[in-house]
Image (cartoon, rainbow, N blue to C red; front, side):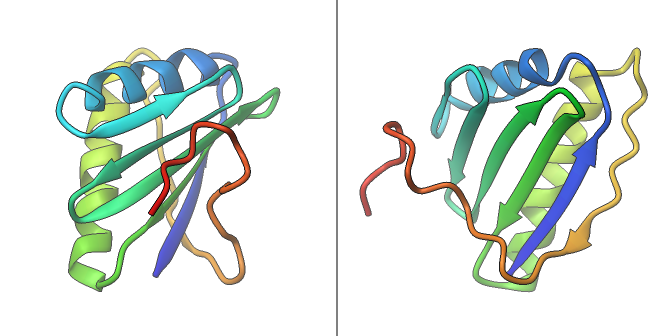
Length: 108
């Protein structure tokens, strides 16, 4: 199960780094200049930033866990980007897969 949201901002890289660094204190997380990920015990968040903003893909094995990932990521992004008042519209994603080609993707 997956959901996707885009936060239109010119500071996508900054927010992505802040999320990965913050969550990385308790769970596996990593990012480079344009991509990042966070692996929660209940799901995963993949991040990608470009000129149009911060793109967030969350995935989990159950609806309850998916909602939990969405809540955690949304709450933290709202706190980190409070000046921009992010309004994320989470959309069910068919066919999108997390980036597994980057060098910092964890091995199963």
